[in-house]
Amino acid sequence: ERSEASEGAADLDLLHSLGLVLGKVGAATEEHPVMVFKPVPGSAALGSTRSVLEHPIEITADMHFRRFKEPFPDPAQPAIAGIELVEEVPLPKWRCVYRKRRLKLQNNTPGFIKRFANAEFFDVAEESLWDQANHVLYVRGRNESFAHLVLVEDFLLFQRHDERDGWSQVTQTGACTIGGAFGFLRGTVEGFVRESYGKSVKKAQDHLVDRLDEEVAVRSASRALP
Image (tube, rainbow, N blue to C red; front, side, top):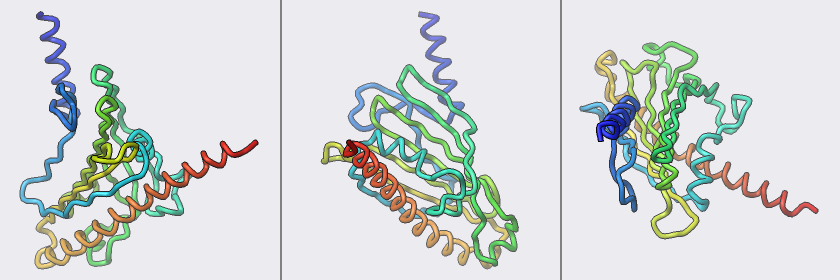
């Protein structure tokens, strides 16, 4: 009993160190690792978007990690300059995998923001949890660079479609915190972030659909070859 208790405590410590908790999502009957979205207190909500994907959750989840073609930059997403896998932690007890990646993006912000954040690139930290047992992919992101100026936090939840077998769905939610350095420009900056976030979400989800459809077409063509 002591060893089981010690093992359970060690499991909880590991999950805590990864920013995970135990809970139940979807049709799960037992507790399993869950990634939650807790924006910085006082942040402004950027809205929530839901998209339907006509592909199984396993294929959709796998494509999330391959949506940007190498070598970088991907012509379809030229702002991505590089992706580094920082950490990968298997959680075999729950059939889960935790990953942390760092994305390097070109700084395409307007001039009035670049006056405060004058750099060619900025880094975004992405954490994910693929729960294979319950068919759920969580993705949590936030910019590491210039976070004291503008912090954008992002959360995606990939699941099986509620009604269509073989389909999946993704819900994306965001929040932002604007630092005091902008002074009277804070409202302008928040407006830009809100508009930019909405556009980037749509572009990213459209790109994911395109990549999924592209691979399905390639597989179909391969099967058709003699």
